[in-house]
Image (cartoon, rainbow, N blue to C red; front, side):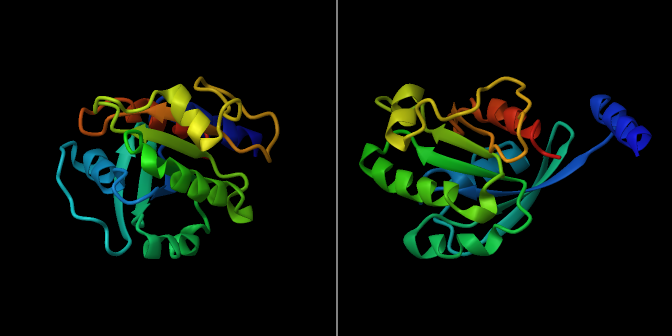
Length: 193
């Protein structure tokens, strides 16, 4: 078995072995989930209408093939999120870094997700989107508003010492300007098995 694992590690390091990952894009409505999914899949910006029903799309970043579920973020859609928790490899939680009036609501939803037992070991990538808009909050401020100050695992290549510790990190981004989310997905990819 060790020889097989070693062989797969070599293939992965050479970019010859692809991993598959199921992720959910979650967050409040108008945070940028559908825009991100379209950008990751097609590399272009598209104005979209609010997501009315769950959709899925596939894309690749590095050696990881992602199947991403965009479930919508309006109040009624959030009730369906639980239906997609099984067999998830990661959660990408997107917050509108400009919409201060909804930070408390976004924090409540994030807290609910983080306390969900079925997601206890699932890595969480938190994307603070829309940093290109003047007066968007800084990363420090977003961490504060979401209750994540001193709660994240770090942005480098960090091996988790305990299998029951959930990797979680905040990356600021502008999907419209193609900034920041790539580093977030690169960080996330190290935790996809």
